Amino acid sequence: MPTLILLRHGQSQWNLEDRFTGWVDVDLTAEGEAQAKKGGELIKAAGIAIDRCFTSVLTRAIRTSWLALTAAGQTFVPEVKDWRLNERHYGGLTGLNKTETAARHGADQVKIWRRSYDVPPPPLAKDSPFDFSKDRRYAGAVLPDTESLETTLFRVQPYWEAEIAPRLAAGETLLIAAHGNSLRAIVKLLFGLSGEEVVGVEIPTGNPLLIELDTALKPKAARYLDSGRAQGLPPIA
Image 1 (cartoon, rainbow, N blue to C red):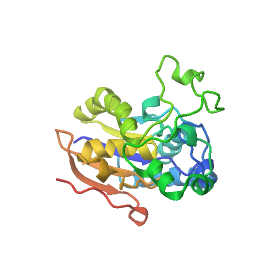
Image 2 (spheres, helix red, strand yellow; image 1 turned 90 degrees about the vertical axis):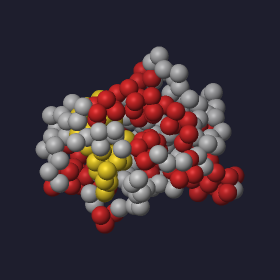
Image 3 (cartoon, rainbow, N blue to C red; image 1 turned 90 degrees about the horizontal axis):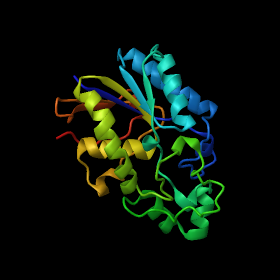
Image 4 (tube, one colour; image 1 turned 60 degrees about the vertical axis):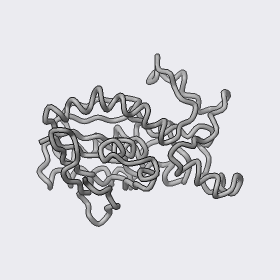
């Protein structure tokens, strides 16, 4: 039976500082490390044997995968890293404090940038210190200068279809350790959600979301392994 575990990275330093992080490569806090380890312990307690792990090229997601796999006793499984599983690119908001940004631009405008499906923030300035074009992780790639959740989906979906779905179709059990918005894009694909529906999906940090799939890769069952920190899930058709 194809099985998928979605694991949002543990708390990062910029999560703690309430800053727009996006593609900036910040590390986990001590709390984030503990969340990742707890996720792995839950996977172990559930008796789940992972065949392969996918993650982004950002440290907070990579270290979450390592800590979780270590706690699960499965550090040996193959791991694939790809920038297309990165967090949403927050453009010109990158690095800004969310509360201060709301005070400057208005809470309603910031809510649109953060929570709408298809309205991106302003693009990253050409002279921004957060220009990722010279980062060798992205060599040869055409990079965005801002993203909405919709355009995040546009880069996640081809990677999902080419690299991840075939593994699931072959019956593998996969762990994807990634980010709130790249995982939200996958949830949209799996559950057939509209843009309006998916923006209401919240994925808690460090809490494995276990999704059992049928042979057509449609969800049969879904649950968070830590029920005390669970969020609501889309209905299964």
